[in-house]
Image (cartoon, rainbow, N blue to C red; front, top):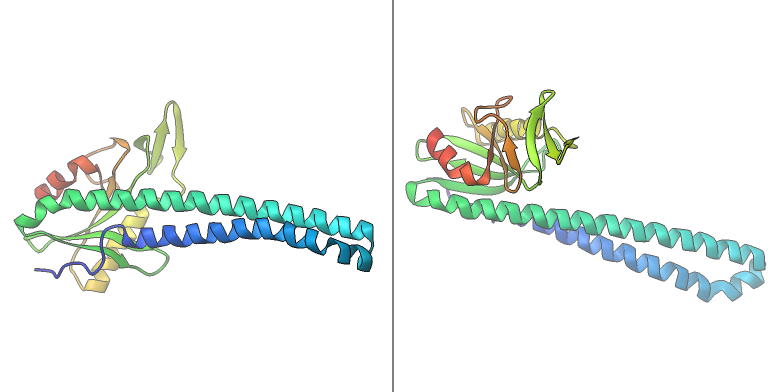
Length: 221
């Protein structure tokens, strides 16, 4: 049996969320500190450069502070998305616990190369088969259109920013090579979205909801 994972589910993403939260606070502090510094230095600037030049510098500092604020807000939202993703990975891990008494084992957060991030979950079955799961926490209804997964929100269809099918396939191939395995099956698991896609492979990838994950793995063996 494969040894237990050195990482817990969602650990890498929670660390990312912490870094983004810290960076956002740094941006907010810079936004607050820059105008204060310039106002404090205003008399010196006015004497040395002239009143008009000092006013211009204050205005530039104000615009700079706004830039830091927007940067901080973007980082804060990115941290929120990372936390959401971590919770999704943790929920999938809880779901998979049902398979452990049956001889399944799991590895979480394996680092990958070539900009692929990490493999959220690697599953090892009692039949010596291996699976890679990429967890997604998007809402809406997932459809397959124009040879890509897309998301329907109400009557509007949005394309995902990334080609999830291609990414998880590349993850599976890299895990196969790194672990020197014969074959690794990729699965894309949505934890919150409704699925309006085939239960068969789509471009070589199984696309399923979290509620169907255990049954699908048991079916595949």
